[in-house]
Length: 119
Image (cartoon, rainbow, N blue to C red):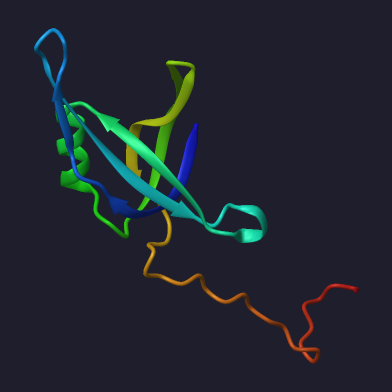
């Protein structure tokens, strides 16, 4: 799946060690957009897993950037409770306008101007 929005917040890196003794780290970041009902703000918390991916994310992205996020949705069960996560696997700067830019106003035609159309 894909989602376009603005990075609202980047949370602290979480680190740990598996039962096998391997170290791991993950990072969560919040993306917001206005794709909700009637343009209401929607927020999404994505997860990045792996040291190299976390470092690359921090190197190329910051709060306020407009990004395209490709992600998978997964749900895990533990003790009859269910946990859903949005696992991002690709984050790129979005093409087009940046969050600081405003959309250009549409051109208006006055009643006196003719565009050559019969209606």
